[in-house]
Image (cartoon, rainbow, N blue to C red; front, side, top):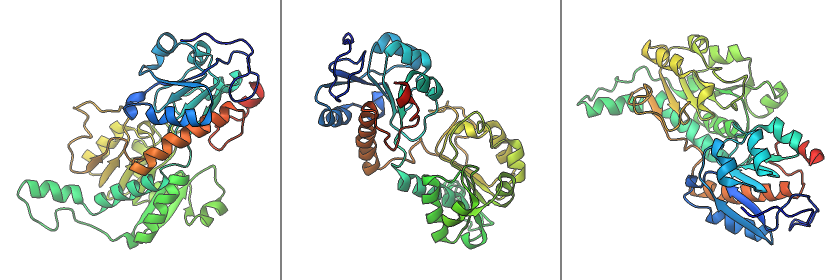
Amino acid sequence: PLPHGGGIYNTVGSPRSGMRDPIRAVMLDPDWFGDVDAERDHFQDLLDDVVVEGIDCEEHEIPDRVGEADLLLSHYTGVSADVMDATGCQVVSRYATGIDGIDVEAATERGVRVTRVPTYCNDEVGTHIVSLAMALVRGLPMYDAAAEDGGWEWDRAAPIRPPERQTFGFLAFGNKARAAADRASALGFDVAAHDPYLDDDDVEALGATPVGFEELLDTADVLSVNTPLTEETEGMIDADAFARLDDDAVLVNTSRGRVVDETALVDALDAGELRGAGLDVLAQEPPEPDNPLLGRDDVIVTPHAAWYSTGSAATLRRRGTEIAVAALRGEEVDGLVNPDALGNA
């Protein structure tokens, strides 16, 4: 890597000791899109002097393989305090909505700005959530499996209740959950949501009935998991949660795999305590071939693809770059996770 400059004025117009010239941005997992061409084009439109590289590496490899960098760009690779110290980065930009794996507290202490792209793919994820739910509510995988085996019985997936007699429940009620709720409501579902970070009046204004966590489990015919992964939420949907859900309920998870206890999920499915599960995320991605959630006619697994459309991919790459550059300039942009870092820079 190029050496750092000393107290120079960089291309974003502020004196920053340790900022290189040109600015160096490194994408840590360029395999996500296959290249960094779009990111390079967007950065070069926003900055006068910038080098954008793609270096595919694990978190522990970053200090040796990346060296010094002003911006670390990531889709899923973690960034620890040690990585921040080794690279001297000013910004860690997550090209996604979730920031699990990034040590935000350490970043704030060091004046390192952490960014994400909070509003992209709301419609895509909302549609994916309801698509997974409706496929299971209507028994499509069961019908398909039966047809492949020569069966042609209309009651193979019975009982099937209409949406008007069911409740679509959301664990966390952020933008993507709200997009799904709009679609579920249009199909006739009652909508309920548990979100400890929203006032009941706000939840009601958004078209859902506010409920506590246990009430959500007791009443949801479809349970959509939308909470971020934290120490508090890891394993939150466990054996006790499955025991509270109705035996004909459907689980949908598009947040993070480790929010759900997958062993407990398999046990609940095997015991007939759950109608089915639609999973866009797993605890290990990609899963091992012998993962017991694969190959079942009561489980649909998609490859962490709920976010995807041709439009969302382009938006993610453009907006992720814009937010990263704004944070580099010291702006409190939407998507800056830790604005307190600006005071420590």
